[in-house]
Picture 1 (cartoon, helix red, strand yellow):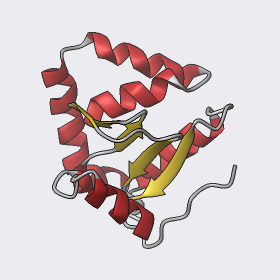
Picture 2 (spheres, one colour):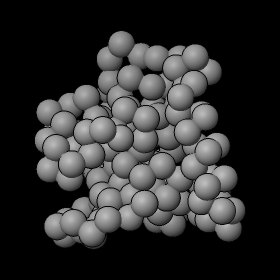
Picture 3 (cartoon, one colour):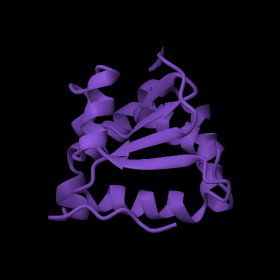
Picture 4 (cartoon, helix red, strand yellow):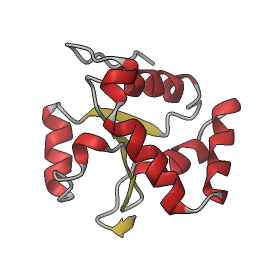
Length: 131
């Protein structure tokens, strides 16, 4: 789902700061973002909560990675595909997931998101990687 909102200078990735899978994704983004396109924000942080409130995303936040880019927000598999488009190296190939129907992509995404703590574990503290 893509919804037009106010424009922003830098793309913001809002992620679950307590999830080990999300932490791994943040590390991949950090390593493969040579132009520093993304600002990474944990949804549990004050900034994350403020952005979620600003964009009226508090209901979907706990089970979705969210990308806010150029005045739009992207959820679930759309966010992952849009993030991949700006990455370098092998992670950029994830953008080709867009060839699958959204309903299939999001069903897979939702299944993994629902079981992410059980499958990948959970952290007590969120730490953003240093660039």
